Image (cartoon, rainbow, N blue to C red; front, side, top):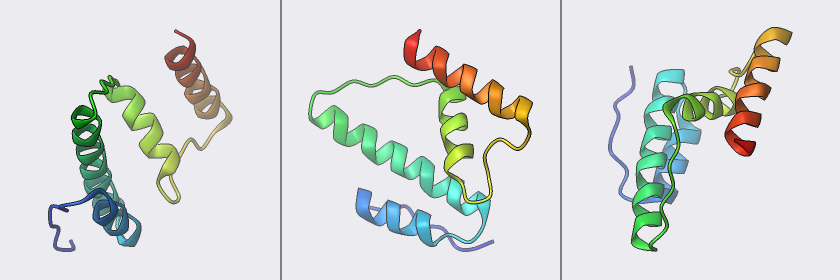
Length: 87
């Protein structure tokens, strides 16, 4: 397991996430990106709310080698995303 550190800026969090070699490291730094982005949004007066399932869906789709594998999983991910976007 690589040594992890808490990034101070959003650009540093993105850089560390993209340089991560393990899926666990990628997930760790992606959570830091979410945290820093939320802090930036709050400082601007923007409020965003996302469910844990939506974050997991986005994370699995963005992770290298991740994402839905079968047609059923792909359809399920599409339906979840549709419900999230359109209610």
